[in-house]
Every structure is written in structure tokens, then in C-alpha cells.
Length: 286
Ligand SMILES: [Zn+2]
Figure: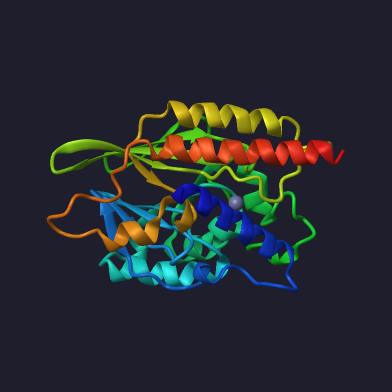
């Protein structure tokens, strides 16, 4: 199944990361990709492997994620290639505080003057520029960035009449945040979900958990994702939502391949099964 192989690929990527002598970051993380409009006012400005999203509003742009520190100039070029100016970027949002999604924020903030809004749970990692759970891996560090506004679960982020809703979905990080955005295509309303991620990665679940309550957090987030009614599933890693296959069939006069009801639920179920396997393994190793 498509998603299973994607999650297997991600697990492989993390194994590769865990063995620096054997492999570096996945090649598609730093591979450039042409920016494009995904749906309505949502644009893709990430690399081939790491997502970054622009949400256009009448009062400027919201940028959700940026990729690694090295990806920041590429994302800036993609924003400009779409005809926007860096000074249009007013708000920065983050799926979760890891170097491969938040690593370039310090540069983006300096170059745009935008304000970073993030959950309390991720604030510390963003402001220290560290990867909780892999503190000894200094290649996972990133330039620290100040959080200007702390978001709680259910808070909204508004600019120019466009409003995203923040749902704090902790587990993968202590403050991982899923964002929801209503959009329209051909007059039909849709809901975009920007998924925060849910893999176990380097997190310790047992016997000494990464942070108190991490297992309950994952479980609560799985329940929440399954309850969300969204039909455009976008995620931080290209493999999680079949970016390459979908963009290949995106074109005028064709149905938008990014409208796929049920993908969030399918992803949540796959990640939940992977989480349960990882938990059983870590429990058994006690
Ligand atoms: Zn991550």
C-alpha cells in the first residue's frame, strides 16, 4: 500500500540518519523543486523532499515550515519565483520543531521580518535550536529562533481575512501542531490539513520517556486526527502525501489530485500502527 511504503521509506531515512557513517540526509531533502499552486491560495515552496507552504492573503503571506537551514535560500527563491516578495511574508508557522522543518526559520525571519507563532511545547526546542531525543547529534542542531507568539490548541492565526486553526497534536515533538485551513476550488469548499507528523523517530517512549506523558500525547493526537474532517492532506515530508505523483497530474482542466478525502485518517491509522509496534519494541527492551 502506498502509505505503508512511504512510512517504511521514512523509517529507513531515520535509520540512515542514525548511522552517520553510512549515509547522510536523504538526497531529496536538498533537491530543488519548482514551486506551484496546490489549491486556492496554498502554494508549495519546499524542496523535492521537505515541504514548505505559502498561504497567500490580501495582507501578505504566511509561510508554514522551511526545511533544513541549508534549504532556506531555496525556499526564498521559490517564494520570489511565484512573484511574491520576501517582505510579503508576515507570519511563520511550524509543523514541529525539528531541524528538517524549522532549521531555516532564523534566516527567513531575518530576511522577511515575519513573526514566528508556535505552541508552548515546541518553544524551547525552537529557541535552543536542538532536537529533543537526539541531543548528542549536533548535526541536528539548527540556528535558534525566537517565538513571538505562543499558540494554544484551538487558537486561530489570521492575516488579511484568511484564518488557520491550530490544533496542538503532540507526540512526535512536545508541541507538534496541525493546522486547518478552509479553501475553495471551483466554488466548492474544501478543508486543507497541514499534518504535523506522527513518527516515533528518535523519541524514547519507554522505559524512560522522552518527556512525561509522551505516550498519552501520541494516543490523544491519533484520536484527534481521526476526528478531523479534511479532504486535502498536506504533510512535512513529500513521501507522506505522495507529492511527486500528485504534482505530476496537477494541471488545468484536470481534477485537483490533492483533493483526497480520507487521507488524513489513513495516515493516522498507519502511523498509529507503527507507533504501537515501536512502543511494544521499546517496552520489550526494558
Ligand atoms: Zn520530525
